[in-house]
Image (cartoon, rainbow, N blue to C red):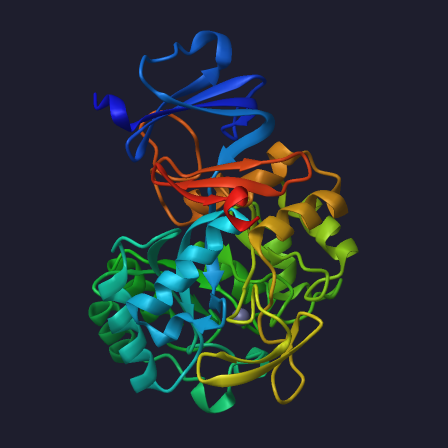
Length: 393
Ligand SMILES: [Zn+2]
């Protein structure tokens, strides 16, 4: 064992998040977790660097499946420097790995973006890790396209999808589509062949259509309620299926703008702690002042942190996962351990990330230290300290 690489974190409360140890102790060896558990039972290795987190919560790094950019940068720019800029900002908000999320764009624009992002996936960045691509559109419903431009929305085209999956070098991990479109089945089979998960979103699916999508293996819903056929007590629609079917992992944007806090509470009760995904859908304007920003190739105006396109439609958010967690706990009354699942173990399971979302021996050492107001104080990505609040003072 390389002694120099050992770090011991003495935690006031360690949330793995399946177990709670207070006090707890976590041992990091290089880029992995070597051990974790009750402080009294984990021996202190000699020569290790010790971090006193006795006044803090120690939790797994957050996994972000749905982010378009931050810090003035959009992921579709696709250069190392752009992605690195995003990578450096995210750990300050608890996020240690993310899927670069594209928006519906002209085919050539998307081809170029997935090619560039595919080449960057798994390269080393200064902060959070880029773990793949989330292709949001363009095979979505024209009536539920949200801010995705009409001209960029396409009918299912298997040849085109296959081209993107191939050019992305198997880095596409999630494909959001509208399952009710004719030809969607072929896309589902294709994406699975390339190891991607499927999500339903920007969809006008009826209850029956959404149910049949789940039978075909689409067990993930993107920004629940937003850009979906509305719920009605006689035709529950896709929203009714997402809420009622325990197999579906469901994203929610807990910013208080995309979904009313009361509906977030209802959503939490319906989905339960093992199926909630707390995502940001953040765009380049995140962690920036109000002004004009880009989302893909489109311009977005941000006023008081709310992003809208030229037609006034919501166009992503300026939410961070740190704020999503705080809002969600406040609005639902859930315990921190239950709410944390929505940023750690649940996205890891939904995306089949085996070494992430949990602090146990062998897992990646993605670790966040938070104070008791859930403010991120220090963040480790694969064992490396990538954020320390002291640096910002
Ligand atoms: Zn969207």
